[in-house]
Length: 347
Image 1 (tube, rainbow, N blue to C red):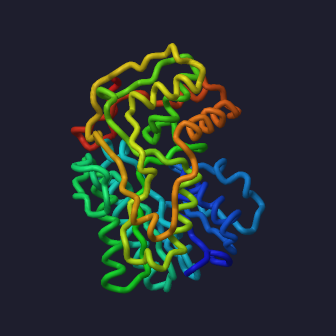
Image 2 (tube, rainbow, N blue to C red):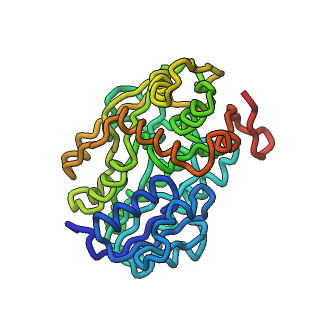
């Protein structure tokens, strides 16, 4: 497959943050024939696809990825991008459901793709499969020691995808994005990420909250680059059967992230507040993206500071006020429950 042009595509999780930007990339720049989005709207939102309303090239099916409706949507398609998942913080308070969605549903989707004769299956995993970096930069041979059920379930999904390729020849590509940020990113609930949460807090005149010492590092890449890279991988015949790490190759300390946001929101006077470490928090991430570049020629286009400024502008343009958005943030530390129910202990 040298081009996605004219393809019929399924994007699970396509109403979510990364998924909706991937839909934009596929329709606007890759000229696919049609995109079917499968999304339960637990983390995704119709608003993320509102600009495609009424366009026959994009169809949203509101369904859990574990459902028969989601499996049926694969039939007759050319390409599947599998992004649907429940996140790392969710796994701390509901590990069973997290595994069912991230691992078991992936196996069922792979089986359906195999019987349906899908021409390309892009399984979107996560850098969380590695746990904390044991060496940097982290290439595809780096040991996988996940810190959470989320990371473990994503690793299981990877293994199922590789098995589908090796046993049945399903044309699978496994990709491990590191830390994606940008417009439509989650700030609310247990899906909230550090960058959007910090921007909202600063816009309200409140300091960043950092769990731990702030020396944790992440490898951040703007969502426009992430969407472009996923499409490029799907078009790469040489990537079939491979597992590919995907990030910017730049390491950012969380404490410096907080300072960058404070400056870009016009509140350099706000000094971050440090709280207790989060359970299962990864200390260091930095990608070795040489394989991605070799397979696709991809290099990130958006510098980190420019990308953060873009995200600040996006939050300033929202119809909700920063104070209204702040009410939807759960600034609390998460602990695993002792009785099988969801639990979050305020910091």
